Image 1 (cartoon, rainbow, N blue to C red):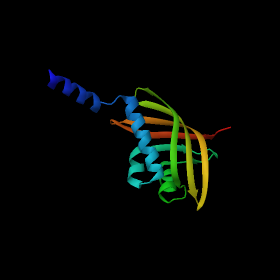
Image 2: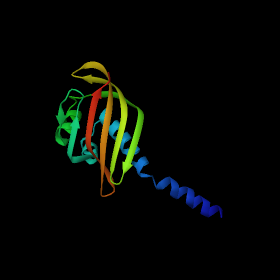
Image 3: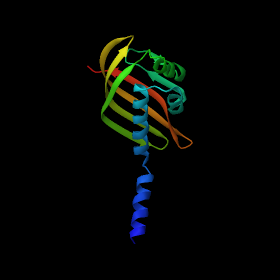
Length: 137
């Protein structure tokens, strides 16, 4: 009986719910934005990614990856707050508040934004399909 309970507990820890999977990939994105890695960013970004900034600029997957890897956009800290995740089928929507410290162009800064992320599941992997940021009023 103890062996069965151990197996059940182990299985429950291994089999994440879709919501937990999306929370994990969102955290992976946060980490990759602070410590950019080209292969890591490319692995989670959908080939048709549309990445919207709060100033209205929209980047493709290639532009998004290059902006972070080149250091043009340099996050030194990112905290995500008030996160809500909705999963329906192979699509997930994540909303949160992003508070960050930046060092763009050697100039320190702070930002606070509302973010919406759209994740699409392809071949059992979540890919970032869309992101939009808006400045807090």
